[in-house]
Image 1 (cartoon, rainbow, N blue to C red):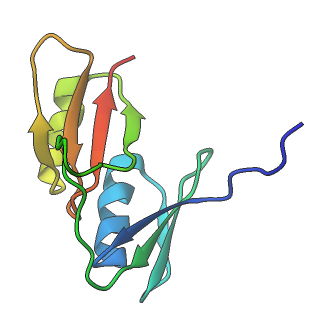
Image 2 (spheres, one colour):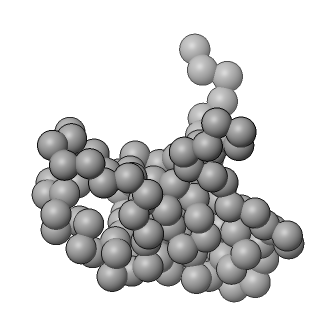
Image 3 (cartoon, one colour):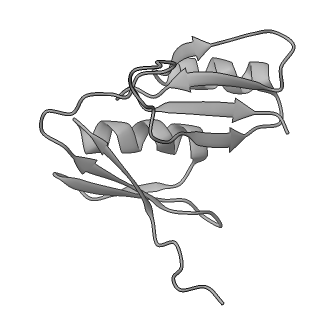
Length: 118
């Protein structure tokens, strides 16, 4: 028996609306709110939230001396098509090795995420 259920994944960032718009472009859904807290409601999926964090420092990837702390794995049907889309939305490639079934990027605030063709 679970003690709790996951409510929402929250990402700290310098500009909540901009980061919510980025993930809405990647995942679809509706962005709600302004200011220090913005929600992304994804139909049939887990909601995300974005919280303003003054002095935000993006995680480093890969870095032995600084933890990435977490990352998102986003499942896609076609890596090349998804890659073109996330790059157009402002993602930055962190690790693109041919022949693997995943690729690693940073969102516009610097959080790492993977596109996975699983």
